[in-house]
Length: 223
Ligand code: C5P
Image 1 (cartoon, helix red, strand yellow):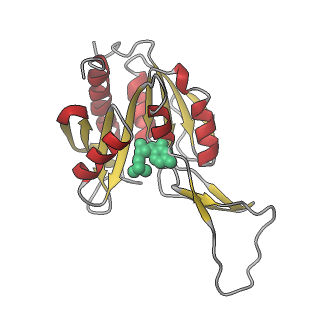
Image 2 (cartoon, rainbow, N blue to C red):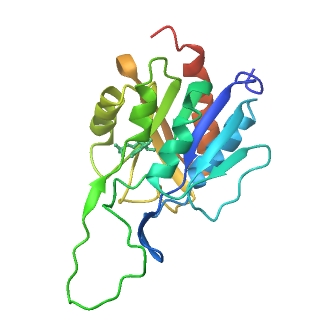
């Protein structure tokens, strides 16, 4: 039954962008609106799941009945996730985590003087890959936003990060993706499984994706 097939399941999700501080007033960030993540959280909750969101800064407000823990940076998001990852059944990473952060944030506002400045950046941890590498990982769902060959890159990430399911979307060309109200997804799972979810509103797409997550979760031990 679609209303109860995730009843009592604990779902931990990341949502929104992260902000990587340069100084007390500036940051490196990205255009993630968190819309898809919030819509998916709502669709999973509607199926009976107990959802906790680890949320970067977005203007969207958390749907009712959903726990939200607010974070800013990738390191804060990682700490909040790892503190809870052993106690969830599914982990869904919708956040657009900044790939790099400034090596160290300045304590006071940087002043402009020279015509050029250089920021030294360091890689952020891959939160999703860390969760999937736990000794007894939850069912893990990742996303892949690609400008070209979504199927090829997503298939590569599915294997490299050892995910249970990945949902890829093409960004840059045409409708869909960041800040848009519509999106389409190509979903892949191990052993060559695939399903295309055509262009539709983010709430409708979130429902279709929640259907697939519940279906694959039910078969988790078979593959
Ligand atoms: O490798 P890529 O950044 O394209 O992977 C995207 C997927 O990995 C998304 O599900 C995203 O939430 C997750 N991710 C993460 N931590 C990072 C980078 C990506 O959890 N540092």
